[in-house]
Length: 101
Image 1 (tube, rainbow, N blue to C red):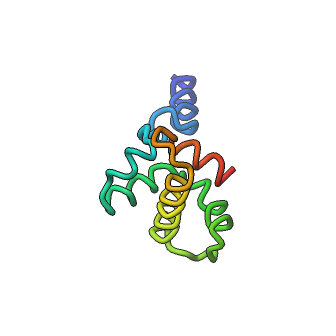
Image 2 (image 1 turned 120 degrees about the vertical axis):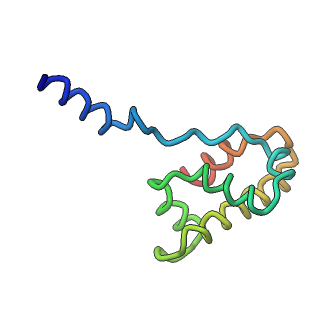
C-alpha cells in the first residue's frame, strides 16, 4: 500500500495528472482573425508561468508589471512579427521560441 501512495505522489508531483495545456496550433493567419479578447487569451496560452520573467525582460517591462500587460505586449509582438514576415502560415510557437528563448 505504501508504494501506491508513493507512486501517486510522484505522478501528481511530476505534473502527469494536470499538465499545462498545450497552446492551440495557431498561425499568423489565425491570429489576424481573432478579436481583442481572443488575442489576449491566445497570448496567455503561449506564455507559461516559468517564462514570464524572461518575457518581462525581453519586453523591457518592470518585474511588477501585471500579467495582463505582459500578455498584451506579447500580442503586440505577434502583430509586428506577422506583419513584417508576411507569412500567413508562420506558427505563433515559432515566434515565441525566437523572441523568448
